[in-house]
Length: 241
Image 1 (cartoon, one colour):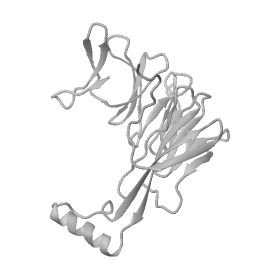
Image 2: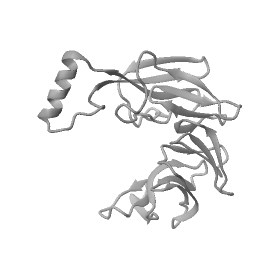
Image 3: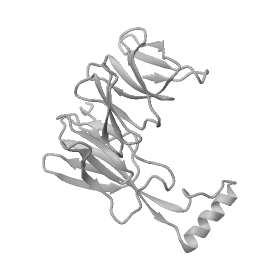
Image 4: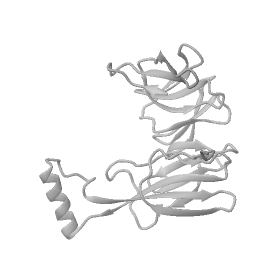
């Protein structure tokens, strides 16, 4: 668990002992910014940093396993099926070998990668498009995409998130967002509201955002969607008695 503190430059990695109802906190290196993923062995944690990304060993006192400096802000990351290989998103997708430090370009565009049970790499191509890398270097297949809507994050920030796979790996949950430009009365109302609350009118306010959450059945290759914004959704592995 990631914990902040009164000191904005210091964060902690915490372990919860449910049986004894205790919390053990270990200070993280000051460059640690946001947690991205836990390794399959649950002994390492991938973090974004202010300059790139880092992997920390969390079995005891926090130890730095590897760091990488990048020229872009990391947007999502995940351990691959081999824990020494990490996939990072942001300015495209990068493969990072934490043993050797080698970086490889996997796709020119993409963020918030996730790895399925077979090792396939899924990612957000843009706010309204979920894609999956295929075997040909740099290429991908579109899995599901919104149509008739603007999906570029250039119009008011990104809503992209990593796809979430069910524990049995049959289903996936994805969130997609598209936009339509306001015109006429709706545009006037948006400008008036921004003025009323003292907020500068921007591209974000010029568009209506349409959010969808989609469930994919990977076995039957079907998808169904419902309108609404979902954030930090989780699969329930067992219903409480």
